[in-house]
Length: 460
Image 1 (spheres, rainbow, N blue to C red):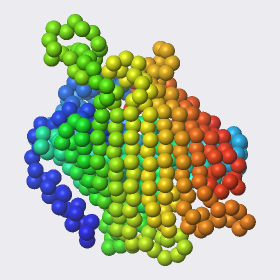
Image 2: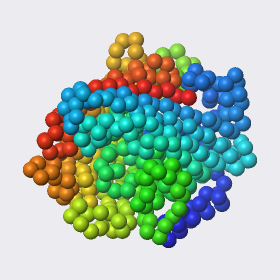
Image 3: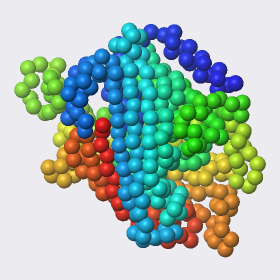
Image 4: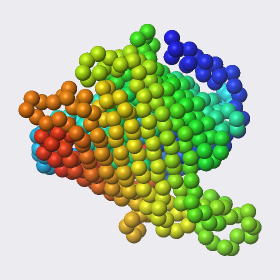
């Protein structure tokens, strides 16, 4: 009953509160999914050149102005293990389509600050990693739940001039917690989406698996943010056969609570001219000092703590644990900028997760490192060039439970990934990708795997 009481209490807060005007959407660091949720239909904000389907002869723009936004994304991956793994010289194709609707309740029914979101997902294809490589970290980030899913169904309310957002309904923790847009440039699932050991070691809900949840997302200043969420924990939350339609809350269910504190930096600030179209430059022909803004090297930092009560965390050596806890942290910082206030340049990031209960944690410690350069090649200002590294330390208890007779104990798995994303149009990209999986499964018994392929995607 704890979960039901918490969800009901926050739902009462949402339905009884009246929000004031929203603040600009660029207040703080946000995950890709969170930014999509917040992009509530803005007057004049629709640009048909950003979408493959355009504006539907003006009807889509009219819908958005009236308070209904349609969003859609598609991503596909084709890759194979050229050498190494359990069965080399194989390739598979997987894809992921996401379609949804945002209803601006202020425009539709005069509910000030209200937003309702519903979305669905369809995934297809065979998992290269489990069939032919044998690694812990999946080399295809679109694997998991290969079928149609009803995903998000939630209500959001803005309060305190938009500084506080309250969400209640069906969504995943990864929509708002433990995620960065930088992760989305990786094809390997050890980075893409979330720090993977958080999903391995506790019941952290993630796309495309939604659960009953409530979250408070607070941005008291443009630099500081706090997030708190409570999410349903159950034995069936990652099941594929219910297509996201099992909305029950059973007596055996538990909860996972998440607290995340973040900070956004702007180092080495300098005055840049802000033109009426919000573009910035170092031009000095402004007529007023008010036309200048201070811009620097952007960075995003946060630390999160998760605690879960659920009686069915299985110990590797037998029996069950009734709780799980751990930490995750992230830091990204632009370290080279081609021009003041420019998005072009080099950004570095590090992300880590620590879950000390080795009797239930598959990967108690994981660290990811990354370099992301936008506009590395002349004339390709929107392209991204990436180098990623993943290290996962495998639990001794888990290693003993899966040890093959005559084989070695698993210790750690590492992945190096090199990729370049060609931004073909504002709505499409193509990304060749190269991964080298070191010690698949962590034992050294499986040959290192070279995985070659590409992913592509577009915005509907």
